Image (cartoon, rainbow, N blue to C red; front, top):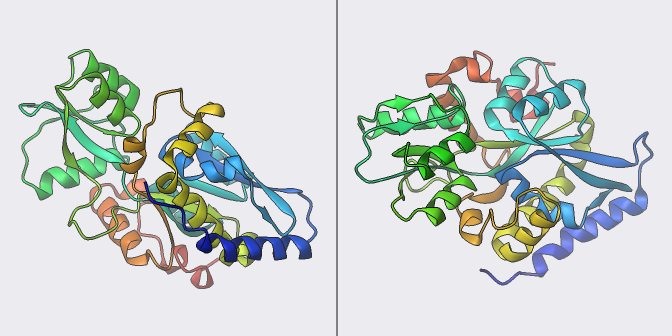
Length: 307
């Protein structure tokens, strides 16, 4: 665990204080942030514990339980900021839902786990990120695993592994840690998140914001870097925050599972090439997952948006 570098916190916090003192008027006294339960919630533990204030408005984190719920929230415009799978963000953009891509907080959370002699691979979520990256990995490495889609969720696959009915599967945290802890016969057979060993990983998650929040982007980027550093700097604190707020059951996440989530924030412009690479892979395997086409340049650069 790294020692926290206090100096890097001073400037962003000062910026927020200045913004709060100058506070702009608005109909809402809060800034609503919608987060999917899962690895992205880990990245936002800092905001849950100490909500920042931007332009006099307190940031409130609200947890949702499915991409479908998140999509409905964004279509209705009920969140100022949201964190969701990158493919859903691209899909909504292609459908004209007017949210701006701020950046990426999670760079990979998918692992192939199983017994070393496994002959079949279970995957959940046909046409979603786990399925697409599994097929990409198999093709790239010339593997011969037949894919089994009979189990529909990560929870069902986890139960199948622990019951001895599944030999190998693709899972994310915290399910990976749960299986490895419960049964030492299982191992991580492959990391599906870093195809060449040099990139930060796949830009699997996105943070989006309403266009009217674009003027706060510099402050938001600073705050997002801070909250995304906390899991690495102080995993014990993050675990306590998440368990106290019942985001995860006690004992579900560990420092190792947090490390495997690859949490760090990069603004969209800094991560542009990684985002485009990821979306190109998605498009080549499952075009409809991102709305049938690659998003235009306005997805990453708001000034270039066609609407």
